[in-house]
Amino acid sequence: LGHWAWRCWRQKNPAPADPSRVCVIASAVSSKFLASLADREGFRFEETLTGFKWMGSRTAELRAEGFDVIFSFEEAIGFCIGDMVKDKDGIVAAAVFTQMAKQLLKEGLTCLQQLK
Image (cartoon, rainbow, N blue to C red; front, side, top):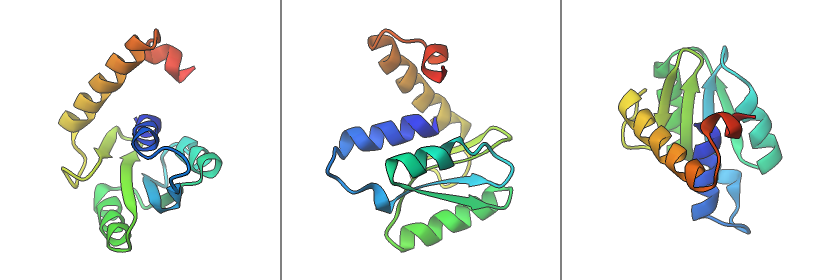
């Protein structure tokens, strides 16, 4: 979902839009995949202590500094996408997953194929 959030941001903000004010957040125990993606694509990755209270607080600080925090997650299957709900929200995550799966199907891919 983090990669999808980035892909959607980039589609709405095509190059030469500067991604340096875009940020994703993960807890210290979470996968470092988004850190690698951030390095490659030029957006910011932040790591916090485990728990959405830490990620939520850091999100608020970054947004106050002018960053667009597009995704936060922790390994225990908590996702926060966008800024509609400022905590982990399975309903929004499920809706975004459905949008992603629909778009991938249009492109002739399954979610598993996209992961590979």
